[in-house]
Length: 223
Image (tube, rainbow, N blue to C red; front, side, top):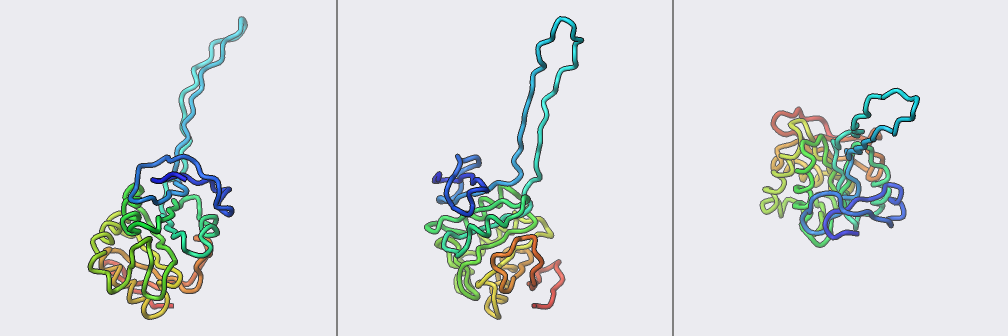
């Protein structure tokens, strides 16, 4: 594992074992960019040598096979139970970031999200208690919002205008979870969704979401 950003072989997600070399820019602390979706594969071929009876063929041009740019960022905390399963369930349009538990998690998210902006969705780690998310060494709750609001604003800037933050698992549960979602939405300037009791489902699965409204986003009833 590289200290600053690294790529992860998806086939090794369940065993949490083999890692590849760093492909991206350095990020804050020692966060791991486990899978960077949207990588390009470029290949060029030279024309084969002609035989005595062959006609000249037009040269083969360089071509590029480009997969879709990631539109989602899934953020995992290594203390989050079952995070390899969440990694394996991530879709092809999703970049996956594993936080370094010893560094500021919001700063790590802000730096990586900026590289992929504009994103449609950022999934925050499902680690913590109702109304409190643990992101690396950062505590995200009502009591610490004043000192983290500037980083939340940076994360919001990495989202498209219609983009959303998703606060799942324990941090988004109950009245405290909805309160935290409201505060994060205000600081980030983007909508925040909370999910109830579906922490490790595939990101493409249909799950019950509640909506925390921000200016420009219609409010929806909580589930």
